[in-house]
Length: 199
Ligand code: 5GP
Image (tube, rainbow, N blue to C red; front, side, top):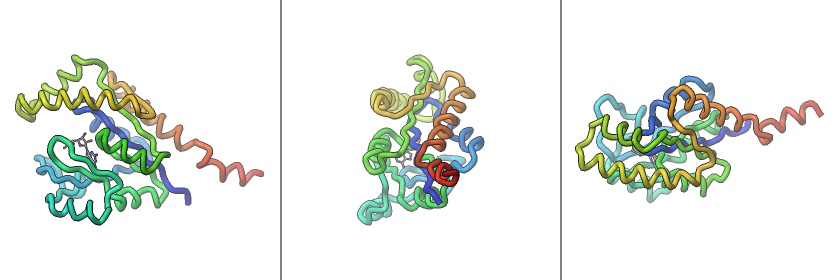
């Protein structure tokens, strides 16, 4: 059976990435979210093994030493990483993996797996980004300013991504990411077997 593909989805905080991913996963069959490891505190409503595997720094460090991560990065002061095992469990059974990770992670994945597809989500404009960032008010003012600066940096890095989707209208954005996934599935590497069968 052909192995599945890796889709990296990155976006600055406040772009609506989580909402898009959730809708995408509900809509596209055979697409599975890779659950990351993190050292950050669990937020209310999050559960271990579904949103993240929550681990302490020592455990994370051990995993780094044992080379268990396809990529890992420090984001907003915490460690995050995608394990080989999480991705492999998905792609080895022919399903496609979605990695909802930051741009540093996207860069590392592309270096390790050049055929991985990098998709960036952009807010429609600067005002919307600001509103989405500050409207959430989960963090304090200072933290939000820090995130705004981080968002600026992330956005400039997204220029290197394979695809960019502007999230002006949620439904349209989800549909566009869905097209990217479906177009990838139609690529020749995957359909060569069908050609061979006929020939
Ligand atoms: P949050 O703490 O809000 O869930 O995520 C913070 C940031 O870390 C988001 O941009 C998210 O995409 C990113 N992130 C989550 N998991 C990973 C991962 O495994 N690797 C990397 N590089 N970034 C991640």
